[in-house]
Image (spheres, rainbow, N blue to C red):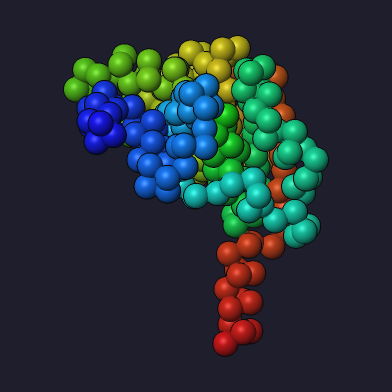
Length: 248
């Protein structure tokens, strides 16, 4: 009878229940549970399993640059990252309020790692996240316009609760890139949150975007309801390499 029940649970894709019951039968712990306790145990196991699989899918779809978590952030190194501020952001309240975050600072100060950690935390809380370099985003959307899938791709980006644009402003924008960025920001303005990382201070973004009228429109949508984090200090990658050389 137990084998038949396990087979039925697996065939109905109730994998959490299947795993919990199988483990309990093997450990001979089912006899210690009342009918109500067993029902609650199986239901909770199925719930947890589905939640975990949903989070795994979200992590995979987000395509983070780093496998980073809030717990891995180093607040001891002096680089402008306030622990209280980051922990407040980690509750994802900024996503619920449709706010943006702009993370700026020199190369190697941990901008992408911090953005990945905040994105990872958002996935754990059930939000849909997409992490992509700005240059790659523009390239993908240009190709989508050629093959006729641009509307579908823009709709997919718009559905993300949190869009993380990494390495913003590494290259000056051309006209198609400005138009694409304007379209993405217009779709998300007041409805979804965006995190942008950049080596350039925000005051230089006008020159990078170019075309003053378009730049004004884009930055008006970005800077509105925005929190800024400015990192500074020695490159963490250089520091890590120097420490490894000292050890060897």
